[in-house]
Length: 598
Image 1 (cartoon, rainbow, N blue to C red):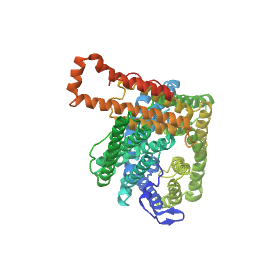
Image 2: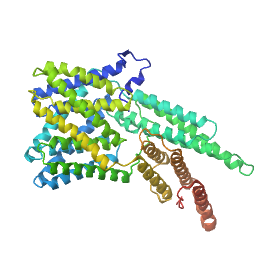
Image 3: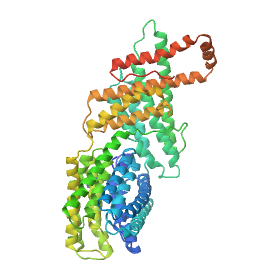
Image 4: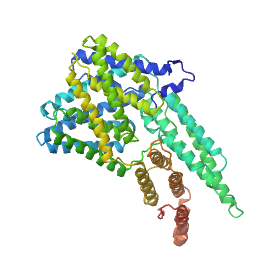
């Protein structure tokens, strides 16, 4: 999400030097929070005060709820990472090569968990890998210092979180729910417009709309930490998204109905009337959920918004990450270079962060570009701006132009420039490593900069040697899983979900298919095949749900009486659905559907 999403709520923002006032306010909050975190860390004489500044750089988000949600996951991931570091260092501290192999497996495990999650939960899984690298790898020769290092890192992160929370509260950081409500309202208008368009809506337009709806799922979780009414607003936003997907799928069913023929005009008219009534009901529920989102009340019906998880893709990505880390560690073992802990730590951090990026190779390229820029900015600050000073006031003044400038870069809507600004800010703080008193040893700084740049280059080289999972491979795996799930739909794999929730889960899979190749456009045939499987699965679920409702309603007794009088007659209608669906499957070149228990 662009970091300047909070400015969407302002119709005509004030602009200064090419940036809106909201971006300047965001940049000022980042600098003040970083200054406050460093001041408290210096005052408490923590061992790693730079971790508090790094926390502020990582939590630099435009709204209150987004920052606090990410802060909570950062604290939880730090605790898990410190515990894992103590366990790994205690069991494998004297095993040399086995220790690096265990660290590689831990990296793979964290990447696998990150692949099964989304949003800040995936970031927390990646941070578990980074924490182990910062605590266990940097103390690989002194295992007795693992626990004190972990405690110091946890204390510094806590101070950074408190600084961000205090600055956002004092300076009245904007809330995110008005922006989210306006975006959902815009999506509702697009769904309504697509349903009212003449003819059957194209697969490309429908898939793009499903992508935009499912992409909002990870952003909803930030409403919980925004205010005391965050939980009702989260339920309302989630229900609105699920009902939007349901309304879109029902609209496609209505558009797909054939023209009325003389012998079937009654059946088609009843189907059209039922679909129109369901679409009207879903639109009313979306409006009701939007009103509950704005007012902070519970929606009329709280839906779940399940995430589609591909274990195959997560496992292959984790295996590549573990092998890449082990290859780079083996490279350092063979070279015999001393003091390579920092480089190996940054390698683990880059691998962990790239695992939650939609395009890992592009992320590695941006890292290769950002690392030298960060080292150059850190050198300019240390030896040209500070130049041996030790007063904290001069440190804060010297950091202001760089931190504010990079925060403004982060506020740009261009995702490439925004990512570059965030990475440069994080890496600059890591290389600068503010301490009390500040160290000005040029030899240490040059070695640190060299290893930092080398870490980015080695990760990029490892990706060239062992390429990450390609977009085409991801698309093939996701389409294959969609076909198999459609084939086994009658066996009850997703029957624990309501049709609306299962439809949203399929929409999340389509969102993953469309983002598999990054910004590249997707082939129309692939989009059409994905939407065809989506439509057929939704139709089958709707039919099964309606048959279950009839079975439990007043017609259940009549159905049982008919079954006792004529078993064969009762079984005949239930066999028509699988045969018709199988014929439609053959015409659509999709995997055949096996008979459903409904």
